[in-house]
Length: 124
Image 1 (spheres, helix red, strand yellow):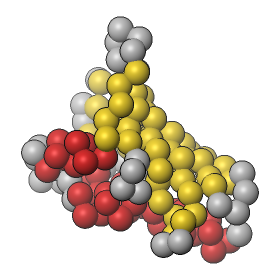
Image 2 (cartoon, helix red, strand yellow):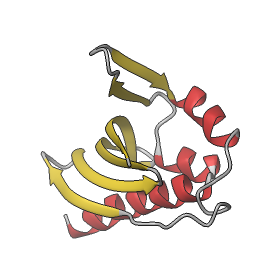
Image 3 (cartoon, one colour):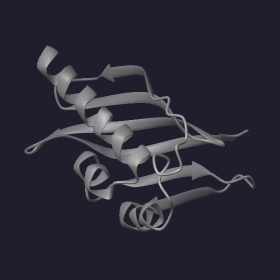
Image 4 (spheres, one colour):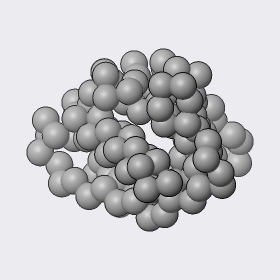
């Protein structure tokens, strides 16, 4: 279990690094190719963004690192429901946007991957 927890933490750190650096290679290493991102729009509808479309957005914007934005990444909790599945609540930021992410992870043949992300954004 300890090795799996370290592997999950490594995937989360890769996610944090990829997000801050705008590096879709790192994000691709963390997220399964079939994953998507979900959030609730102000009108109460569910927005679903496929990974490939998200990567295009990431590639098309200046990274937080290139803009010298402050970085604050935090793993709030990791919950393992069994040897092959986990859930992580994390917080990160690309000011003025501050994110709380709920990440579902699965232990696949090639290791732990984020298979889904549901998030909330605060803009300050």
